[in-house]
Image 1: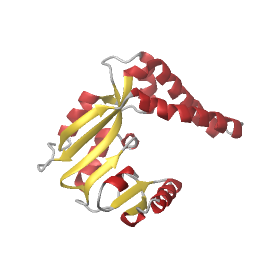
Image 2: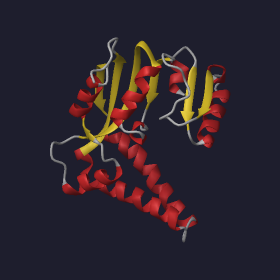
Image 3: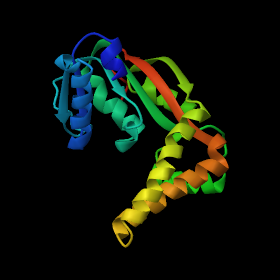
Image 4: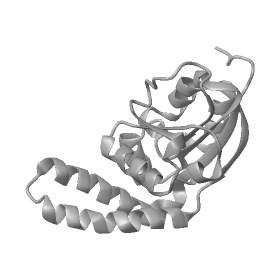
Length: 201
């Protein structure tokens, strides 16, 4: 919604989960912004657009679904020359994370690495980095606080549902890990532009 308000042009919102798209469309209608928004139910790994379609691709908290390096590779052809890509990715913030931290993320996001390694990947994939920063700890509090309360409600309403209970258990484990070791990892925001030359093989 912020991008719709602040930037001109035509926008395409992509998600596999239709209810999220419907909610976004409703909010855009209420704000009088739906005229330059199209919602597309699609896989981010197989986006249904021709090469050179976009001046900007923006993905917060989602590139992990395909992996940071693969996402860079998949989306570069969709950008116009000097088009920009803005993404966030989970990263380690210390050289040697605690064993508990490493074990959890190896199971849940095995390709997770450091800011420095992601910057190398950006250059190798045919982009020029424009800037990056680590999101503040307060962002995690704003995310995990409401989530923790929601998990309690879900646990009560899905008692005996083994699938839901497994999902809730993983989320609770992640929250507990962050409370103990949150300073060892975080989310970093990366902004880059497509280089004219093709990436090296």
